[in-house]
Structure formats: structure tokens, C-alpha cells
Image 1 (tube, helix red, strand yellow):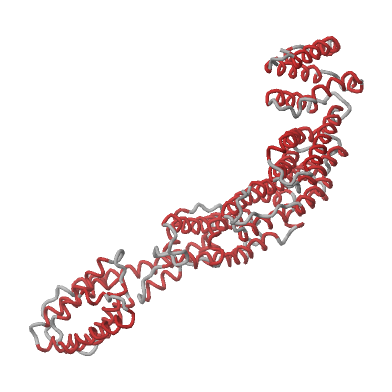
Image 2 (spheres, helix red, strand yellow):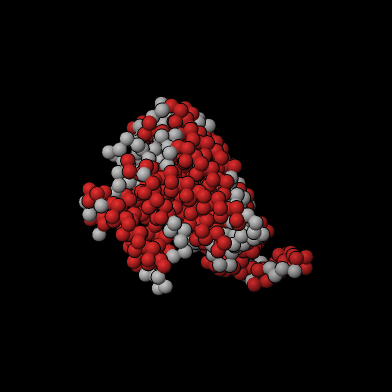
Amino acid sequence: MTKALPTALLRSTCSEASKTIVNVLEFALKSEEQNVALIKSLLYCLGSLLRAQSIDVWSTESIRHLFRILLRFACHEKPAWRKACHESILSIVNANLENSLVSTHPASHQAAEFILNIITEEHNSLCSFVKIRDTDCTRLLQALHLISGVAISLTKADLKKCCEVLLELTRFPNSSVAEKCFESIGKIFENHPNNESMPQELSGRIVTAMYSSKPAEPTVLEIGSTNLLQAWFSSIFSACAHLSYCAKTFRKEDEKRIANQHLDRFIRLLFESILDSSLAKMRQFCAVLLDRCLTDLLYSHIEELEFMAHCPQLLPHLAQQFRDSLVLRYRDSWLLTIPIFARLCRIWPRSENAELPPSLAENLRNIAQLRDSLADGSCPLLDSHSSTEAKNALVDEFDRACIAAINTWGPELILRDVISIEPLLVELEELKSLHLLRSWILPLVMRSVPMHSCDISFFTDYILSLADRAVAVTKKLAAGQGFVSKLPTASVPKSWEPISKTLGNRLAEEVINTPILREAILKSLRALCEVAADQEAGLKVMRGGARVIIPRLLTIYEDCDPESQCDLKQKLRSTLLAYFSILPPKIVNNPCEIAIKKYEETEKYSPFFAL
């Protein structure tokens, strides 16, 4: 109701209204059955009455006495009264001062002095405890909660003293109190105090002091949580955001330099924490915070605050750190660092000649090599116990990083100079071993939406020439497939002489080096064995080639994965059985003796015995 009353009426009746409120409040507190709702309403009424008073009357003792009565409930044990007191105090100290000559409310100094006295008293009384529990710090935590809201309206001297007390309490032997101190400091920066109360130089000194108060990371064996360290990182982020806000607002050279240097230091620390932290939860938190720094702060610093002039080494340093992280020692962090690299590709400033920075190009080549090793679906880079979801997630992050590079820098720089499609076509043209490791780049090129169009000469000279070569390879493969498909259905050879010397060597070489032709070769061998069974010349040729090709087929048969290569294993078994049916016992005995010898040495059952 008091909020709806005119300000002039509240000022003119302040004396009578305050006496009535105080008398009713004292009576309600002395009664045996205290009316919680009544006292809560009286506190709100007293706060609204004081808020309506002009700045000039706050120098009188009567108004200050009324405010002291309100402050008595700041750390009260009843939550409803404490909440009403906090809201009333904040509404008073943060009152509209547009029509006043002062930038801070007179009540803010009185409130800060009262709260800091409570903090000091509680600190001194708790220091004598051997073990400080959270329940012992209730009053201290309540005072810390209020001081962060009052601090925005303090003068420079009061705000400096307040931050000194909070920084000193960060070493308090209770994690909840230290965490609350960091949260209070972060909230002060989030509220963006005016430049008179907290100039850029003071903000920078506070941030520097906070680095010396960094809490130690809990070990894996400790029960404690990471909330304290996360609160510290969050407070530093809020401080960097405040420095950035001030630098963009006032556009002074010193403020730009301070904001850039502190952001540079914080980003380096976050990336190091992602790599060095032993706690997965902490690594995840730092990765999210680093992404916010790059997106919300660093990009605008590069565009507006001349970041590259003040801190030219940050981006190359991050690229170097990322390159060093692409080793198996840090593979648990790849899912976190690869998205960070993709973000770097997006925010890295383009040079005048629009060339790809060497550090980015080197990292993209390393990513392409790792992605090549995952092209066939096997994941030797990961632990054998890793889940399928983790393996697929790693492939997805590699692909997203490459798409981000193509979209930001254009296909011309990426496909021609960094992730070339040339190895894929060379592999197809030579037809020695068709693993097609670089085939993953083709769907990414189709999905990409580049920000900058490529030169027409790149399309005509590079893309079209690759397309022509791909068409030629396709025609060659189609012709070869047609020839091979006819081979098993051929009738009885007119003469075995042309293949009597080269059959075993050629087929053995192709069945090992050309997986794509294995099915056709095995089918052809089965057909030849069937034809040669009734011909002496055919038996001679097939038995001669058996000395070379049988060991190769047995090696492939034993190495087949029983789950993913069941079909190939069945065809190999059929081919070997067809071959054994036309071989003399002397030739068959040789692989049997080798299998028995391996079994005696390793005591491992050989798949050969299943034949």
C-alpha cells in the first residue's frame, strides 16, 4: 500500500508515520506470539517510507536511526523478516538519484559499515573454532549475500574496503564462505558499478589480487566438490566482462589495454585448465566458459578494442596449445578442445591478402590426418572400451571443425592448400589399395555454406579437373567390374598354358592389396577349381598356384573379424574347401603342420581347424 502513496505525502508525514511503525513493530516483537506476517509488512512499510525521503534529510539523526532499526533485521534468523529487510535496504541504497547532485545514496555508507562490522565480528568469533561447519557460518553467509547488492551504490573508498574484506575472506577455512565471497565479487562486477566508484584501474587491481586467491583443485580422491573453483572462474569471467564493458563505453586507450590484457590471461588459463585438470567436470566447465569468452568477449575485442595490437600472441598461442593437445595423452579432452578450435577458425581475423594463417593450416592438416584414420569406422585412436557414442561424437567434432574452416575461410583455401581431395583420386587411379580414407571430406563440402565465394579460376582449374579424373576412374572401374563379373561364368578354358606361370602370383597379390576385388577373385578361384578337377592340365596349374595363394587365403581367413566380416569369412572358407578338394595330401599337410605348431607355441585355437 505504501508504494501506491505519493512521494510528497510520505515525506510530509514521515515523522508521525515512522513513530507509528516503530511503536507497532516494538509491540509485535515483544508479544509472546509474534505475528510474522505483520512484522514483515511493517519492515516493508518502513523501507518504503525511508526510500521516499529526499537525499538532504539523510543527514538528520532521526532518519539514520530509523535506518539502523531496519538494519537490525539484516541477519535475522527468520527468513521472511530477513528477506523483507534485504529488499528494503536494496531499494533504498539503489534509489533513483537522477535529480540529485550525488552519485551514491547516503544510506549506502551506513549499510556497508553495518554489514562489514557483522562480517568482521563473525570472522573473529569463528577463527577460534577447530573445525568450522556451514551451520556455524549462517550469519556470515547472510551478511555476504547482502553486501554484494549494496556494493554497487558505494563510493570508491567504501567499495575498495568491501572488496578487500571479501578477498581476505576467500582464504577462510570454510568452502561455503569462500565460494560466497567469489560469488559476491562476481555479482559486484556483473552490476557494473559506475566509473567513479570503481575506475578501470581499481577493477584491474582487484582482478590481479583474485589470481593470488585461486583455490586449489580438489583431487580425484577428495570428497569435496568443484563448486569453489567454479565460483572463482565465474567471478574472473564477470570481472573480464565488466572491464570489456567499461572499455567499450569510455573508449580510452588505457582501459582498452587493461581489458585486453586481463582477457588474454584468463583465456590462456582456461585452455590450460582444460588440458591439465584431472576432473572431467572441471574440464567441461572450463570449456563452456572458454567458449563464452571467445564468443561474447574476444570477438568484440578484436573488432572494437584493438585486441591484436595489444595482445598479438594469444591466437597463435592457442593454436600451438591445440596442436600440442592432439596427442594420445590428451585424447580425453579432444571432445572439448576441437569445438574451441572451430570457434577460433570463426573469430580469427582475416589478413589483407586473405591467406589462411599457418598455425590454423597446420592444425587443420593434423585434424584431417586423424579423421582419415577414422574413415573406415574403426577407432584405434580411442580406448577399446570406449562406447560407440564416444567414437561417433569424436568423428562429428572433427567434421564440424572442418566445416567451420570451410565456411569461414572458403573452400578455395581449405581444399586446395590444406585438406586436399587429391589423395582420394590418386588412390582410385592407382587401384593398389582402396581404403578411401579421404572420402569423408566430400559430404562436408556438400553441407558447407561458405561466407565468401571462391574464385572462378579455382572452380575451373581445380574442381573441374578433379571431376574429369573422377569420371575417368569411374569408367575404368566399371569396365573392370564387367570383365571380372564375366570371369566366373566362363566355360572350360581352351588352354591352361597362358596362365600356368602367373596365376598364383597375380591372384595372391590382388587378393591381398585390392579388397574391392576379393569377392570376384574368390568366386573365380572356386570356378577354376571345379573346372580343373576333371582335367590333368588344369590340376597341374591350380596345384602350382596353390603354393602361393593358399597361405595368403589362410592368413586373411585367420585375421577376419568374426562379427563384422562373417560374409567374407564364409566365402574364404568355401574357396579353401574347393581348393583342398583338388590338392594332393602332401600340399595340404603343410598348412596343417603350421597350424599345429602355432597352437603348441601359443595354445591359441587356430581358425584353420574349423575347415
